[in-house]
Length: 468
Image 1 (spheres, rainbow, N blue to C red):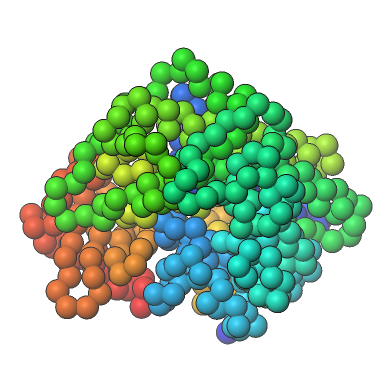
Image 2 (cartoon, helix red, strand yellow; image 1 turned 90 degrees about the vertical axis):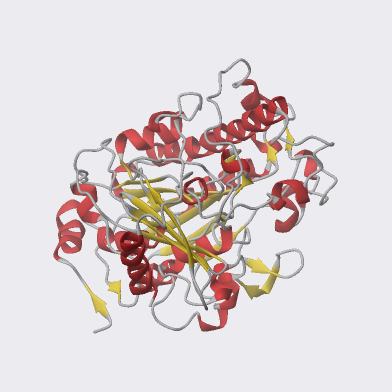
């Protein structure tokens, strides 16, 4: 049977709301799970904090991949990567010609079920969802048939590619020559996320008074590199005491450590290295935090506009980070590892009629769970063939436990349970393993694979089962 409908979805559709709910999906690029409301008291994040306090924060949400394209493939297709091409930034482009095959992508499934689907900013890997040299070739859509509207406002940056890594005044990144951070005096429109938010508000306005629910996905690009945002957000962190960088040393044994090429290769560090220079590391961390606050301000505008349009009570809101980012942990500055810092990311869901808003849940969940969850909350069918499970039960019972999450990068794969992380290296020949016991070693610094072979065997079996 191709489709299934659950009793809970029917109840949401007919007893909570008289019509299908709207959906606001907010994707934030490179956002660590460090908000003020989640314990990072040095971070100024009032808008996202308000969502945490009114919704359900999943404090153990893990992404499928520590790279943008593949992580967004998991979100938008609801499936694990079944082949190497799906573990890269070109994942969605690699399946574009198969867009008409079931199960459809998340936005296309909602479009087929009567929603107007709108994407603004960086929702798929390319902001605006097009290919070509400047990411603006309409003949090369990243997700054919998915969106009624797919737009990336570029302003002075002219093209989505230039806007993605843009500086103030329309300046693009020049690989290896431009700096990793910038803070120019000006308002939110000084940088690209201001343009994205303005367009999203416009699209929201366009749906008012229409007898059609909307699925509006907004992709905010900060705090992705370069750490560039208006100076007013950087000023917030003057004099703020930052916590020490935990486990800052490079691992000595088997690991997915890397040389932080995205950070060091694409930007001019002016001879400085945050792995050796404490003052430089401190400045990069403050610049990252400033970009989090800039992104938070955009989230605040989106949530406030829902209120202004009297849509809050009719709208499911999802805040999702596409992966984490190392700020010196394990001597890494970037993502692309299979350590906790790369894979743990914020996820908050607020749904009309939800019980116990503001209570966090520690159940292990993963990005592929979002697709079936939104289907069930909206009272529409859940396609067969998805990799995740609906979290509606966890929205109503935040005390649920357990869960597992699968992630991968290249040929390496990992499983996270409430107690352990197993990382396996290689897919052919002799496998090698890292095993970390999170009840004793939250920093993943002591590999117990040789001491606990039975645990390795069982967790490896679980990886095989979930990825088959």
